Amino acid sequence: MSTLISNALAAREPSNGDGSGSDAVQILAAHGDHPSSYLALNGSASHFRTPGIDGLIAYAPAGRRYTVQIGGVYAPASQRPPLFEAFLAWTMGQGRRVIAVQLHRDDASLYAERRFSVNQLGSSYSVSLPEFSLKGTRFMKLRNKISRAAREGVRVLELGVEAPYSSELDASLAAVDDVWLRSKGAHAKHLRLLVGDRGSVAAPEAGRRIFVATRSDEVLGYISYRRTYGRNAGWMHDLSRRIPNQVPGVLEACNSAAIERMRQEGSRLLHFGFTPFVGLNAENEIARAYSRATGWVLRKLARHGRLVYPAQSQLEYKLKWHPDLVEPEFIAFEDGLSLRGLWSLLRATNAI
Image (cartoon, rainbow, N blue to C red; front, top):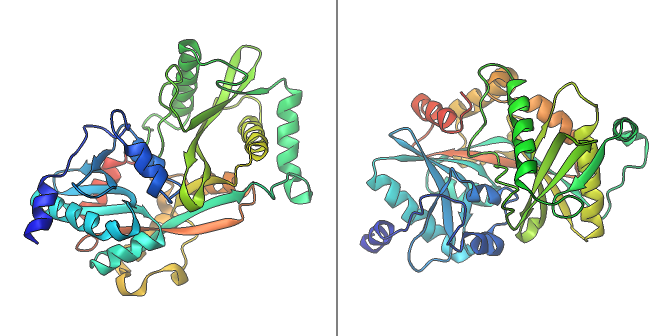
């Protein structure tokens, strides 16, 4: 244990998680099987490292007593348990407890062994691109929306391909962000940690691509995509923003164009990402670590949690594309659920 604690105390913590000046991107490319591993690169995330282990854990403080871990433990299989133990020793030394979100089953089992309470938090959705086609009656409504956008003069351009990166375009996308957020209500805020950030298109990053819907010189909306690695290699449908009450089908046209290009490139999967409070199923739970109290709270949020997260509208968009891979994702609480811990998580993610 003394070696474990000394390694934890020697851990390196960059001031941000953007990967600049570090090998974070290389670690995720080598060990980041989770489709949302790119969240570790968000500016709001820091990285826990420990000497002798080729891996990282992404985290952010949540109040004075908790640390939110984002995704799983990104390291070779044999090094995941010692990195996880070092992280727990480090947070314990700070007087903090860990809340881990968006865990795949493999990671959730690791947390269950460490006596965390573990519950399914929601589900993630993906489409296999080689077999994907918009043909058939099940896609008729979707095709009609895309066709209408085309008739209204909407064009879809990929930045860096049909449209150059520029500070002017960056400002246009920021304006779309502002209009989109205002449309959500006076108290709406950008979520943190559990969603991507657009970054600056004036300084494009590797592993990110953006498709923009335009009409004449006006930007109507955009979708950003992030590269995914490992057994889930492909692309993640990350941020999507549009100007409300404009042409219907803007985002659908963007995503359709992106899918076609990704298929031509030979990409295998398009991930639509995680949606909390949906697809909850007792058969997915890890029985030895299941918390009835957490399960009760999550079922209540599934029914009445619209103000916390618009899960149903997000799910409806994803289901339009008829995903063929649906996987449960989990949340884990060290020492079990507490109201203070749940409140700290919601505050840290900007959900309230």
